[in-house]
Image 1 (tube, rainbow, N blue to C red):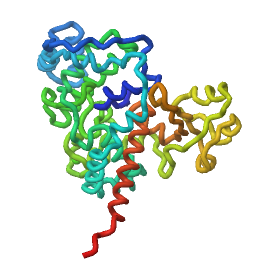
Image 2 (cartoon, helix red, strand yellow):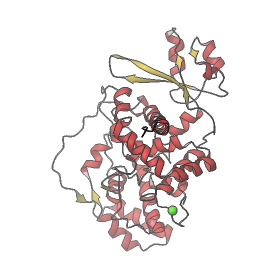
Image 3 (tube, rainbow, N blue to C red):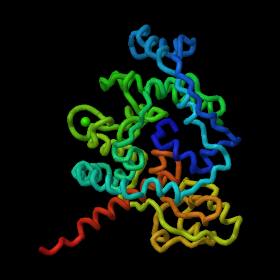
Image 4 (cartoon, rainbow, N blue to C red):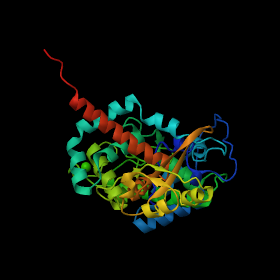
Length: 365
Ligand SMILES: [Ca+2]
């Protein structure tokens, strides 16, 4: 997916990522070595990339050649991009606890209070509830506290020209990062960013909402009205851009994200319902016919739903839910049911905290 975002937390996510992300073969992570990063150097493919991009954009080729050959090839980035070793137990409850915890809830409530006007305006304009935007910004960057310490130019150059061959989809991913490197260079020039100084995730995701450069150029909006799109330091622009992104991927105002369900006892039916993973496929009538028991609300749902099963480690029972088309839209931000449910539950928990605070009785004087 070209516009898929690769947030800062992807490193955490691979530990619990669904089968779609799992490596087909065991991939042992290299032990951390004190290997000093070296410049990419004047490799033929780097020079050709620089010349092609400079010609297409009307930029000075010598300057771009210099910028890219001097970019550092970062060993740590190549370690982090590899999927977790097979056999790592996925654990929704452990993953959830990383995000739905008191410090992040407190930060989320403060973020919501401070930016309530922008969140409300984004909800009115794009139909995406404030709690979903608050959930995404909270999971991605802890409300701007953790936006990534890698130099994005180095990280993207590493993945564009020296992508680890051990990755199961190395060729695809390398092509993706070459495109993102070009997008980053365009973005820097368009927005007056110093490309050599900008920091982000090991995969090149940027700012409060951790947009990839291509997503920034395609989906970000100036939402605070100052004439510039600034996802690095404008919470207003980040809020509007997240809502706009989800709206462009088909968010349906008023639709629930998910419902509860009991799976059928029949193993073959169960397997058939789980096979499409996060892709909404079955109507409530389909589910009932297959022997599943959707909740009352799910039975009223118009449209297709996905039957999603999350692992809770090797021993505990799994968590099962019905994801709607809006659940699918949240996974366009990051292709993982674990990610989407963390976003949704964090937003709900922050909202509940706000309501609780609003209702708390004042101490009688
Ligand atoms: Ca702005």
